[in-house]
Length: 88
Image (cartoon, rainbow, N blue to C red; front, side):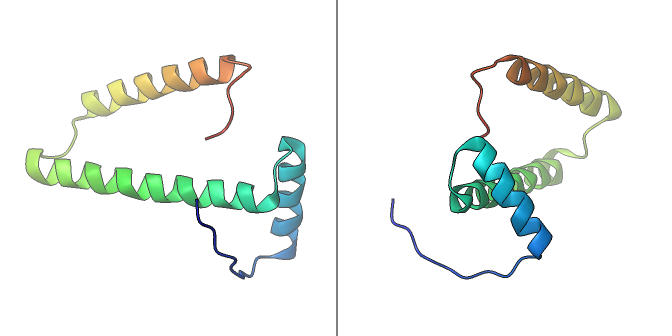
C-alpha cells in the first residue's frame, strides 16, 4: 500500500490521548489515526447507502429500527466477548 506523509493540526490533549491509546495497542500513532479515518469513511458510505435505500423504499419503520438495533447489539456483544477480536 502506498503511503503519503501529511501534516495535520490537532489539539494537544487529543494527540496525547491518541498517543497513549496507540501505545496501549502497540501500534504507531499514524496507524491509529488512519484506522479512525477509515472508520469515518465507512460510516459515511453506509449512511449514503441507507439514504439511497430510504429514498427508493421509504423511511424505516419503528419496528425495522428496533430489529436493527437488536441485531447490532447482538453483534456488539459477540464481538466484545471474543478476546481475540481487534479493532478494525
